[in-house]
Amino acid sequence: MSASGGTKAIVAALGANLGIAVTKFLAWLLTGSSSMLAEAIHSVADSGNQALLLIGGRRSQRQATPEHPFGYGRERYIYAFIVSIVLFSVGGLFALYEAYHKIQHPEGIHSWQWVPVTVLLVAIALEGFSFKTAIEESNHTRGRTSWVDFVRRAKAPELPVVLLEDAGALVGLVFALFGVSMTLITGNGVWDGIGTAMIGLLLVSIAVVLAVETKSLLLGEGANPEDLHKIEEAVLSGPGVDRIIHMKTLHLGPDELLVAAKIAVPRTDRAEEVARHIDETEARIRAAVPIARVIYLEPDIYRPGRSAADGPAVAEPVSPVPPALA
Image 1: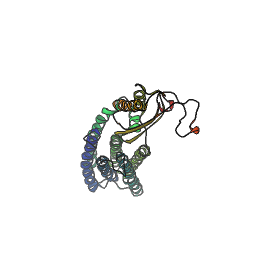
Image 2: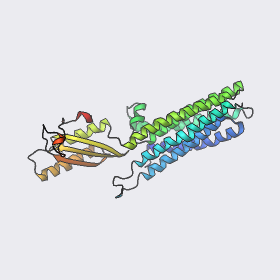
Image 3: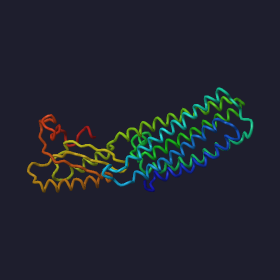
Image 4: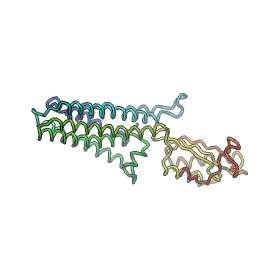
């Protein structure tokens, strides 16, 4: 992965989380607060996740091989899926276990009472800087898309992962501040356990969202509607193509799109003309959607009234811009 917005956001989050993790562990050692321990483990998990995203980005840049002819671009999705598992198990489940233990055996915070509050306020400031960086970098590619749609539809997993992690970290810090503050005010350690439980439920929820979204990317997603429309226009805007009989797209990675289409060519075209028109159509597609790097166009004769059952090479007749692909 190049020095892109995603990398910048990951590095910012990694630096913030490493510093925050150290201070949280120190606060836990001084006070024994379970909220601080849960937040410290949360920061460690986030740091590990950001390291995994960086590794995935580097490994995805390997050149294609005969065994993997389409390259390793989708390896970024695999590492993003591993991130969701780490966040669920290391972060969420540990926090829930610690919350259960703390609620069963509550202990107040009797020494260094100012430490956890100070650490949490500093951590909120650092996480806010990391979150701000992720938002700024996401805005470069998000456009007018809503934040929910951006997380759901983004083909590059790094920015949505960092956004959700940073948002979860900020909300988790607020939960921890609530639990610690109520424990200091009331002297009842149950509040510390409640804050820890809230952190655990939050992390599990974020991990589930990440797992669902990255699972969809791993299974293989096609181009977004905007790129599909551009590809259709590019195919039909030049000579030698009467219509699109059918077309399929697949993301080989966040920045690489495969386009496969069967196109209807005029019956009177000679082989040389068909080959020239296909080359021109491929050039138009790449100009319209630069990430469309792997293109396969199959010329055919459009024969209305015949179905795919009449022969493997003949597809169902469709309109020039198939509704199913819009």
